[in-house]
Length: 550
Ligand code: NAP
Image (cartoon, rainbow, N blue to C red):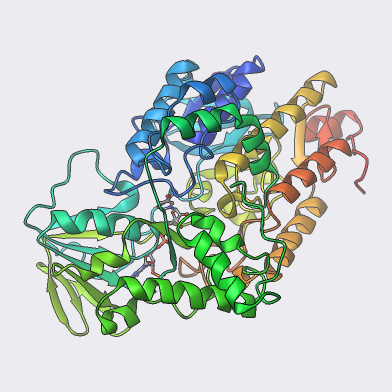
């Protein structure tokens, strides 16, 4: 058994930041990473056109101003290879690789109540004992491959956007089919279309998208951001989404149609996701949302020449933003190409794969390559893959049978000293995850500082705390339009998954205040113990109950 202070799982953005921070506190840290190299989702999502839809300067670490100053982003929205280069640079610069065990999947972990340590099992049989278990496994890292019959029969190539191979994939002369029109499908469509003989896009639900207006970053822009990076970070941390956009304080319904048109027009080719904050109530009120939908449909409509195709591509059945919109670079225009066709799966559903392609109710589409851009088992998929067992033999899977229950998205009662970074119940995918990630890791570091100072051994969410928080997450979602639409925010992406709203929709700024208040109140909603639960009980040591908790 290898003894460490912190066992971290995942060497993506969150895992590397956690490694840096925990090691800086003098802790012995080991990171287990199932893949052969760094990057998490950015390692696996190397499909053509993959890029971040948060601006590069904001989708980067804030913990080191030297790093901020020395890294030069080339585009407003960085492509996947550039993001991977950044991650690798960070690892070299802070000498992080030496503590990472690659090709090592955590298959299980259990909390030993006698020693107050997590015993973690690697897929290769090695075991670690750790005081703290930190799960940095990502929210969109377990891919979803629909259960379409006949997949083994297909004789061509099959890929998934989230498990893209490391080798070069050639599209030249091939008939390619993409299933799925979320962000991944929308990003790859315009890039693959010019490279292949024919592209068929299999669409179930037309999706909203805002133009990325991507552009190279000029020297002048780079200097301007770097001269004011601290205030940019502050602004991001104090914005609802962590993107730095402050919502317009006006309602979309209180202005004249002319003023609204001007505001939408001004934001359309500039704001990306920020377009959703053109008015404060776009994500809160259906009539307000309808005004944005009307504008977006008109804009998209102008991009597609053929009226029948246009009608099929226009999103209609759900409010803008209620499912995650895309930020695209020429997606709709791609359908004007003569080598691109849309297969509307609502009219002609997929029946099965064949040797030669995909059969829908209208007939066979002959293909040489099929790409699943069908998304992920979001939020909980990767947390529930290993067998994680807390106190009294309770598994996380059993505990979350009816959906994830967490205190602030970071901790679970019954699982002492286990910390989830950007887990369900935190702003997570409703925010710039970089902001949420760094916020949570700094918060945990402060908690560990206090525990060390006061010789405390365990932290654990209370049942009362996590129930109240889980209710709060649902209550906040019900105030929004997110609630109205099946999506991966509420478990609808996987058949049989509990339909519970998972990210906290109260905003990054509000969430940060709650974390700060929790700490100021002596970590209300958590128990901090001077010994393990069992030891404390056996020896009569009083469990500490922080102020603010019954
Ligand atoms: P997604 O948004 O979940 O979209 C999956 C797509 O596959 C949807 O169009 C869905 O249709 C379709 N689909 C699923 N099952 C299907 C089936 N059985 N038959 C036909 N179609 C099916 O997945 P994604 O596009 O990979 O994006 C996931 C998330 O990853 C994004 O929302 C974003 O958070 C993240 N992402 C981020 C970036 C970035 O730039 N940062 C880039 C790519 C992805 P329905 O809508 O009908 O279910």
